Amino acid sequence: MATGNHAAALSRFFNRPTIPSQLIATEQGQSELKLNDQQKQRIKEITDQVIRDVRDLYSGLSREDRREKRADLTRQVVKLRAVAEEKIDVPLDDALRNRLRQVVLWVRGSSALADDNLAKQLQLTEAQQRQISEASNVVRQKRLEAFQDLRDGSLSTAELRDRFARLRRDPDERRLTVLDEDQRAAYLALKEPRFELTRAASARQPTVQTETQRRIQRRTYAFKKAGRDMEYALFVPSNYTANTKFPLIVELHGLGRNP
Image (cartoon, rainbow, N blue to C red):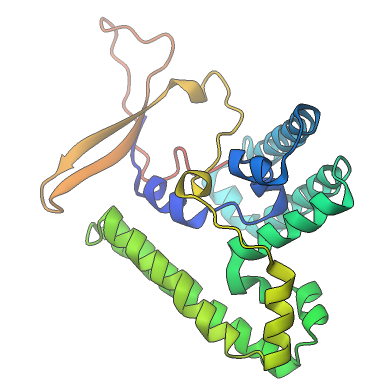
């Protein structure tokens, strides 16, 4: 099976680990929290389990089924992540829990202001929350436009990286202007000390792979009109032989992207 893997490049920008269960599974997150081996092992067990549970939700569903059940599947994934968050909280002491919250705020940036709990802590008004929500909607639309440009081949990976960097900076400034002086001071105090996620940690984290998934090969081909190499994924069945004709199935996007 071969597929033009535009989504693979975009996923590096969309899938920054922004929730506790993602951040604490990264090497940088664990180093920042100074976790011991027992804590790391327990967290790995929890995150591996939620990965399997999410995969099971989508197992056997066609693309049409996934589209029709998207809202319900999303709710179930959110619930699974919430359960994982609760389990991850257990092996941590109060100091580690507090530092993890600070790290999450640094990584999420001002988009965290849309969370109900943080809004209550900062005593945001309804008008302020609407302004923050509007800024987030603008970012989502611009991300969709970037995705379309990538699919059309009119945007390189480097250009995409620059555009997403701007999309993180601009709304941050716009949202922060919504806060009054006291709210801004309280928000900054909740984040300290500073944390900066490295590019390696912000890439999609390794997941538990089946034997079938390990047979997926990542390759590239020269796309002359775009003037660059494009990625695709190739799956070769375990019983393949050069002397036997096998059908070629081409799927655009999807492979390596969907759970």
